[in-house]
Length: 372
Ligand code: NAD
Image (cartoon, rainbow, N blue to C red; front, side, top):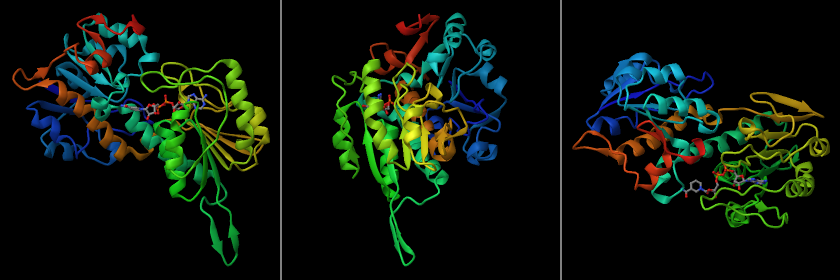
């Protein structure tokens, strides 16, 4: 089996789908592992490092043409799909909800497509869960970037020159990213409050030493995969009204609220921003999926009434080495779990829950109902 790892095609994404510390797992399978030249630039890993580990340097075109399995942390374009061998597999982060064209072209060219975004949320699949591994780092980065834009420090400091009050941080949405944001802000000494529509997270918030803000929105809840259920427009309005006082007293507000496969809910509007203190920071972690904050723009800091609204994308890429280590482990686990050593190939057993969920296209057919 020939496996090829591609360099990220997005200039803002410094991550690599292979990492020097984890590449041996693929070599041990008995596979030939190729990589696109320059793949490790964003993590300061030269081509030589990968060659010394037994991987083979190649061009992007050669990787696409020769491989049985291509791994990529960005979607491919249609021309690239047309270069791949019939019956080969693309395993990657392919942003499927905005990439119907890619899905259709894989079906047409009989390329199997595995979307790492569709790894199911079951215990056995946690080691393959790219959304969680990257959201965790993104939550950490959101706090560091917000702190760097604030004109005060986060911890309380009792100095001879006076007592400096701790910063107040409010985290909206307590999934993987939100929990890490809370933990990071606490470690830096901030006073942290948090809210989520899934009230099951109250205990997790308290266990990190933060305070859960109680807002009664009537019936809310979560799906069997642990994702939040969409709120009604009336519930969203109520949430905006009731949480605006918490925003007004905060120095940093970090929003992480997402709805799987749907645009993110807008939770902070201009009325709330007008109530906030000049110099405070609102960090919109959902900016790439529609945004939680009115007026946030991708990769920009918009200043409104002195409040900095931050919309940085590719957050995990700002800690690219750790992000690549986690990502490569996620990919390797999928490959190793479904590789058959006798036949030296990937076995697609649709009785397996992980295969059933993550494989979007197989042998020319779109498997996942959402994309038919
Ligand atoms: P996500 O990225 O889909 O959303 C982020 C958070 O925003 C969620 O906690 C969600 O409840 C919240 N949210 C949505 N609308 C909101 C609103 N209007 N106001 C406030 N908050 C709102 O979520 P996620 O990080 O993927 O995690 C969701 C859950 O799944 C978590 O409890 C997580 O621990 C769990 N999880 C389980 C597994 C597993 O079992 N394998 C893997 C990953 C995550």
